[in-house]
Length: 478
Image (cartoon, rainbow, N blue to C red):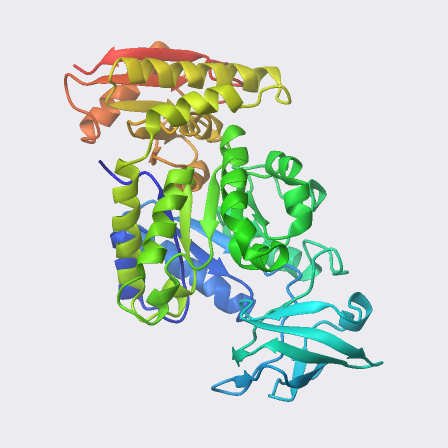
């Protein structure tokens, strides 16, 4: 069985080399993530163009994900090697200070002192260093380190989201987003979303004319407004780092399952992220707990797994992708396909979608049942926007989904859809003859064989765009 769960790999200093990037793609990276929290916009655009070039040379369909920094509060740069903050010591937080030391932590957020109060507990870096505010002055705050550790680079300073005065997306986010819309980026991740309104403020054209907007769930407010955020987004990311700090790490396993279920019920791809194979930043192999974490995310039904520092700054980016691919492929083989689809049929929501989408919902459910009962080798979909493919992918069918589209941007966005092989097709299949041509194309490409039974799903309509998916055929490949 081919791997169904997709892999996102982050490019960074360790993977900028063309040979390393090509190795990650060959190892199974479906999407390359470019984070904008570090470095300049020009450097990020150069990385984006580099990814496109290497993917073309590899003759692979590789999606691009631009991760906007959002209203992330960061400390000023530490000197090389960083600094150790000992438990019980006091340190100053000083907005505007140009550098961070063991005694004074510069903060890049001028309004910090207006958003915090005495007794607030803050987290530094990935949350391993924690502190409590014990004094507030007019230009600095004094904090006591309640749990010490080492900080380096420009680590984040976690302020509770309901306290933070910064809006999402920030002006800087929108400026950088405009540049990548011009470049033709496939997907954009929006950080520190608190409501559906934050998602709508992105203001880009709907996918595929614009990028697929991915809402990162990492705040308490996002969890409280989860249904609205999922409905307003093209996809969702379970950003477990800040989410675990804000709500407590003990809440993460149940939150992860809840978010994934909510996304799949509405046909939205969902990404599980943060510290998936964290030990592989410095080690050749992951821990047993990390392997179990990856497998459990697959069993939860996640669409994609994301590698961050493992491939951006780790010692072996290609090895990290290879390991993720092996673990997720093995977990895919144990996925409970039949029970997943039956549970989904009982929980999926159609009350808040329009009539055309309800037709597509019914037809994709019928396609899953027919393909399963007939033992079909594949489900062939044709979709201009990717909606039909994402709708059938909700059911997590045991056979692969061949997602044809006449739109190259849609093809790249479908790299995020579970179990889908994105394929560029010539035109919409709005007739039985055109549906049959897709079967022939798939056979010629070696994706199906003579004698196979396949389900073909498409939408009829005038011109190149069908409003609803309303054609389903079961055919035996000649």
